[in-house]
Image 1: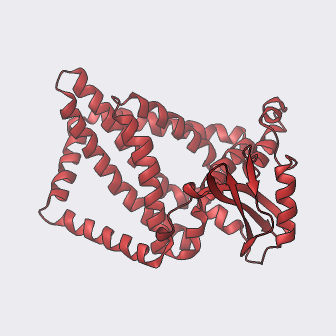
Image 2: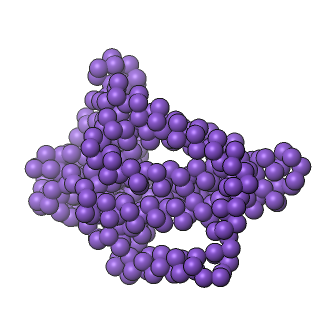
Image 3: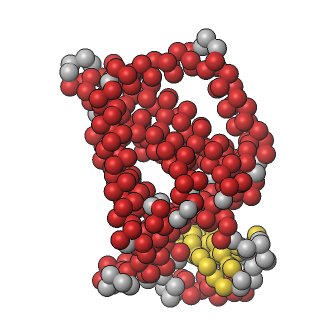
Length: 332
């Protein structure tokens, strides 16, 4: 989530102009701001990265989207217009910098972060959860027993764990190296990732303080990264999560390469290592499930290995969330 900071720092705090935003939305709805996907695919290599980056900043409006241009709401450098896509309500967000339109996108209500996550109470709750989890790991408890059992599992299946690390970290490194030869394309891919995070409202947490930001980072990485795109595909004998993370790690390496991040890559490296290790652990758990099942030891035994790996991965995400929130607030 390194691009979270990049998004936050890009925003000015000057009041946005509703009229400029209204005109931008009208042009966006007419298709004058967004390049077509076919145009990007047909573009020459030197032009494609610029078009892809513009596509990320001005994603085409969904067909059938209706926008109320008469009721704008101004929040700093953003102007929000009520919008609807069929029965799904949401808002069109216009981001301005220095009076110029930087970005326009539609955010469905169901895609946004739950509002309670952005409250101080949620931040303090996440701090208490973290301290309580740490306390339980230091005391005789099921949480400590699961943690030690997960570590024992890694030692018992060291070869499989080592393979998973070398394969996925290797793809991340390969993507990072390729970015040196295509830095403009890498920046465009980073803009696509950043746009997806901005669309769900993650940038709002940046100004809420370290506690809230850490809780939001953990919520997003746990729910979307470790659970929905980690544990769930791993249940199908491991191979789906291995293929999914192979693509994810290569793309992450390409978009978060030192060729793009420059010196800040070193500051962000602990976050990358911790978060990527969490997803490696759930991938390892899926492969362990496959191995136990293939050896005739039973799906149930493999399922325990998967859940132990998932539990250990969640702990890594907890550490990553606190470091990244501190990194965003004080280092970058």
